[in-house]
Image 1 (cartoon, helix red, strand yellow):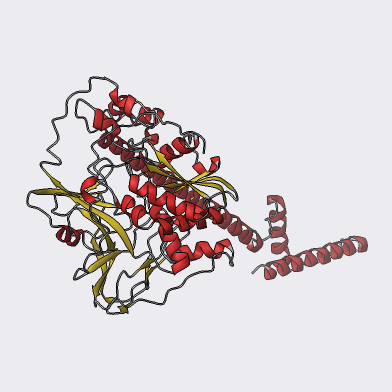
Image 2 (cartoon, one colour; image 1 turned 180 degrees about the vertical axis):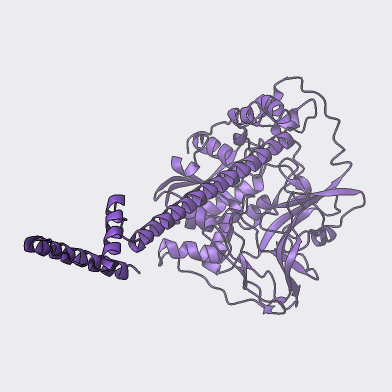
Length: 537
């Protein structure tokens, strides 16, 4: 493979990784209850597929995928469903979400495995199988894997498998690569054929020599179609865009996806879960979690999804003086609302904080515009400018300065001599912009609905008026005659109803005949008027 490339910026925080790599991956004991959230992935919630008091088996579907972007959720152990209700979940908001509460029966009874002959069926069938098996990205984003595979172009230039694991404290991928390199390579080859990809590269930071050796050996044994590459240790070198840049030299610009440039990136744990779903027929019910920080025995546990984090901390021997808990790493992770929240598919690490490891933050000082944040930013932004715009609520200017290109890696805050929590300001600005966009969209929708209703009412009013006019015209009497005609008709009626005057003998015979003709004409006119009056009521 050609030489490596560099990305702009980056920092070197203390690693704190050696503590949790001394022991192999362990299986924790089952807790008294598991709380399995139905929303552990990007996209739509899964729909409950079980009832309260129903007995379930390990691997049984308990949440059905719904919508275009969604994956199923499965029981991590055998037992009885004791509740389907909101419970606290690991999220920065501290809010609850719908969970299925399972009481383990400790029999570990499982459903029959459902492997798939993925080479003998259409790609769409393979993707649907991964959807039904609940496979989602385990690198942190938890995007449904089937959708990511299906969204790639028909022929991909490079498939990148991410084993960098650059953030401090986290070692779950390191231990997975050391102990299960063969299944990672097997899953990688499957994804390489499904896409398909012309070449497949695994990038691992050079501070993981044991993982590098194990993965390289497994790749060679599998035929050498996968190339394992050691990349420089620098944070955030494990970001998808940064790793793609290092391995291929391609920079993914704003507004574009890497697939448009012929590159796709997956995590090593995702590759392993793809192999397990297709070859072994196993649903995603467990994940490896690093439990470290203020604990007696930091190590990695293959924990059932839904296990309360407090249970894992007890297994690792939580020490006195714990001041809080972080899910993820110290750079991009977030504070947990409580230790009772469950393990989910995104739970790669749990850190028990202490005053020694995480001293209270120093007071925030004014920005001195030293631009160290600019030098450290891997997205090549100007964080000091974004800070001012966010603080002054000038969100329009923040967007002009590419606020949404920020990956929230925390490198800028790490190097800031004024101790400004820059990422917090950027998250605030993003949330405000999103809120205003939602409000604007809601207002636009309301205006469109109002205008459509007003137009409909006006149209209905006009149609009713036209119908009424037509009905009135059909029922109206004939137009009245002129005043002169009316006077003549009235006089005629009076004349005909008056008694006939005696005929004087002085008139000639011709005059009498003419008078008789006139009287006959008038009588005919009177009959005509009477008939018209009868016809019109």
